[in-house]
Length: 327
Image (tube, rainbow, N blue to C red; front, top):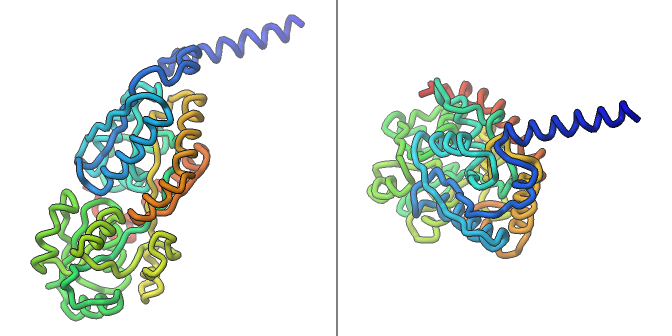
């Protein structure tokens, strides 16, 4: 009996130490949420990804019963927002809604990454899976991806393409490596910054995120030619994959997630997962995600974290294959 009591004391002491180290008491975790929630967005207001973040922030407000404040922390390909989240108090009141795939990739795209995502962030919930799209101006003569590839090979080093984020950059380089195309990469801070160059014909094509691709296609500015995923997406079932169109080896998918500081207590992580699991399962959210080029994706925190770790390992190979020099 004395040994059993001693074990209970030790377990209790360990739990208390963990609560103190994470800056929370058990009572605080039980009372969650008791204040406003900040949702960090790595993109500027009005961008395609910002629209997605604000949708989920509003749905979170309804689920949690607390005011949600979207805070845009733009720059360094999402590193500024990710580092801000990691440095925040691990109490569930600061959460980062962003592409987990891009967050993982950044660890290999920068010589001195400010954080190690797989160790310093914890995925609380996954939201969607999404392809990147190969797009051209609606005025482009290229109606299919095969036509684009043939034309860009003929154009040689006079060809050019647009990208505005990590996945688009790697996708563009893998496409060139697979085909021998010599197109010049033109990076843009945001998708909106590229619109005039698409309209004028200054860029021949783009490797763009699904939100911007769907929105600009709907607005009559762009034409989507192919997706970067291994299989076709529910959101755009008529759009072929790059592999189907004769360019194998470019199989990338992005995924958005809710990420927290790694030290966030498990009960809070589980509560946040439950909220977003319910949100993603609704017909309204499925319609929203499909409209923006993605398919709903529900996982446990453990499965989401495993995907983050897997992607961080995989992107080391992608960066080398695409011959990208870390910034």
